[in-house]
Image (cartoon, rainbow, N blue to C red; front, side, top):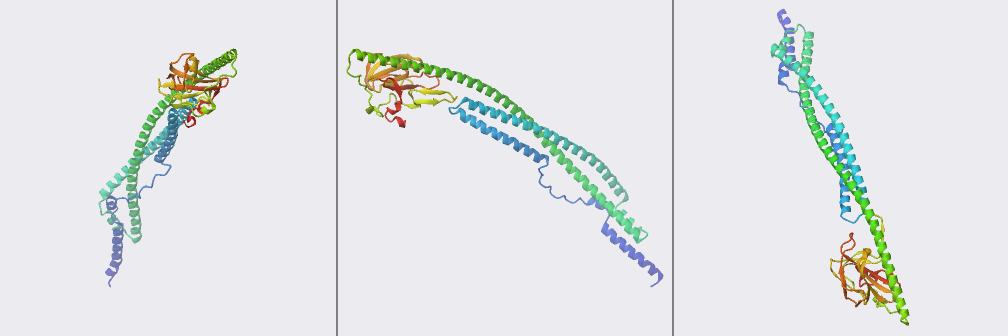
Length: 423
């Protein structure tokens, strides 16, 4: 081997090394233009700290409040469909007012939170757009440089290295330059994705703000309506209480008057029997054999029963008889024979017929629309004495029926009527 061959061998090995490095490295310009950044991994599900998650959590809290109010509204509807104490209705409205006020406070909190999220998203968007502008300028500058140098620049740089150490240094430099160019491209794409996401967040936040304001206006209207309704219910409750107390006073006065009247009738009966030197008091047409066997004075349903009753507004009424609901004008018949001692209007009893059965026993028929008998007339069992009417404005058409025994003491008529306990 001659000297020329000996000198050529290191050069050949150096050229082969350069070609291998060039092949491994490739043209930075070509790789920058042709190679796309690696596909980013799929985005993970939004954590609870994201704006979307926080909005969902806020909406869930608001829905729980509204569900509570819906339950109260259903309870109010149930109350209004039944006999109830107006104070219960007022209390229900108070709770609805409280729940609606809580919903308004929740909406205010949400609006403030959405405003803060808008500020954060806007700041992030501005920063991303500013950085994107800088990165794009850098990328344009690099592309211009790559274009001017041509596709074989990297290869030329490696082939012109004066030594193997210079070759390695140039390779490292070109490799780092290529990595930097790839990172720049990836960052530009990342910033584009970030800007798209921030804009989407802003759009959703703007929609949430609009929805929040609409719902807040609706809740404010509802709150005012509930406050007005509550005030009306309070006024109605007060009027009802006053009206009920006045009515109870009238009923008590009428009952007292009736008892006085029966007492006077009984005293007159005893005096008449004394003047006639009767050996024994007149026998009553009502006997113990009639217990549970008397025909009903009118067919119908029981509206109220004998005894003490607690009214919805916590007032107490004592009924000395029963109320038998029936259609207006339905004929009323005597449950037993006797003499009509009263056929006139008596306070809250309205038009009333009282039959004296003898022996201190009486039957009373009140709330009549008409009276078909006169005082002093004798009637027999099942004779028609009048018709069902409506005297009490708080009750439908009905007959008020009493039985009074021995000195006019009121007893439960259901014990005397046929099948009374089953009605």
